[in-house]
Image 1 (cartoon, one colour):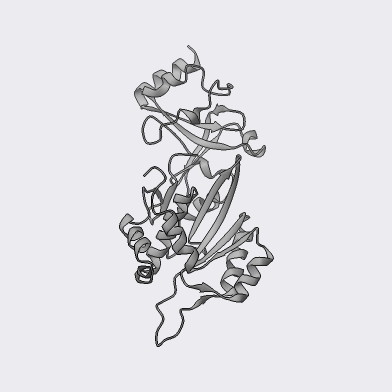
Image 2: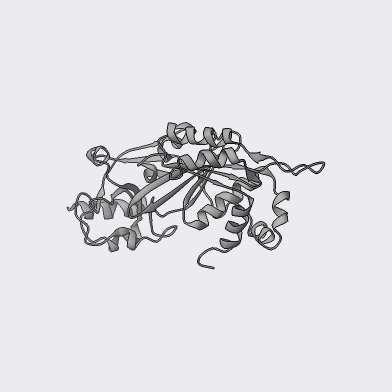
Length: 281
């Protein structure tokens, strides 16, 4: 009996086949490890090359460890039994005649870690995929009446920015607000098969009182976030303020302009208006 026949019979009873897709070689690899991670472990994996081998809080790794040591682009895969006819060949360690990502249908028969969900939210129970971080009504109201942004609470402002970045095309992982370690969310983007991961922190100062201006984002905030990015070997950081940033913060960010980005209220409003709608709406 061929391996494919065995897997086809196995999947008939189990309903699905779990595997690792090696995008570097365009091959499927057998899963050698599958285990649940705690919050700290999940965050560590999210910040590295194996982030797409993580499904929720469960990490899937290939039996062939050389694919990891050689820095292959890997992601978990899930193929349901009724979709196996799309892959009429032995599954593992064979050059595939097609790119499986081209025929992937997320949330239905086939799913891969690189395209299953662009939005994840961290809860006490673990990391879960979500369809949206915030109500479309909130985005509509701010687009039409920018002053409404002042009425958004701090947690919703973080969710709002996470949603906007997802609409920009980033994969977003929104951290729990009580234990964010200086990071509100991670924003990941793949360009020309190169993965870039950025940490983002959002500042939403209280409304101005007694005629005073709202608090500006300080240079200390930007320095601290940059330190977090460097400590976690991330590609850069972005500090967002719904108010303004200090001249010292701008001066510091200009020193490392490729790694540090800062944004103020004007930038935020422009983003909300530009990405008010999903691309397919």
